[in-house]
Length: 128
Image 1: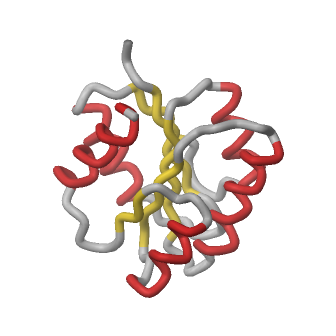
Image 2 (image 1 turned 180 degrees about the vertical axis):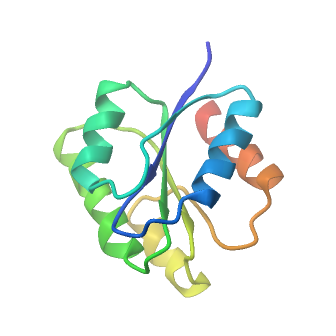
């Protein structure tokens, strides 16, 4: 069975090259990838994830608003009683990684993360 991954750009930043590169790498690794495009609200992300019955959600944020946006996604998933693992990426300072993981984000990929590492970690996440 092919695993389904939602890649979503949350917030108002309009730069999505990194998200598209990650989406392509995951697709090339055998995953079915649904890319939502830019400027998605947390509500749109969770609604799409439920409708598409995804196995994993990847959030990308470059605007610096990753903590409130990722937190809201996690709150909405909990409110909907949906257990979908979430990973994040973008311009996330190393000092914010522990806060993101404490809210339930499984993995955080900051600037310079290799595609090989991202694919390997995603494979581990969907295997659990």
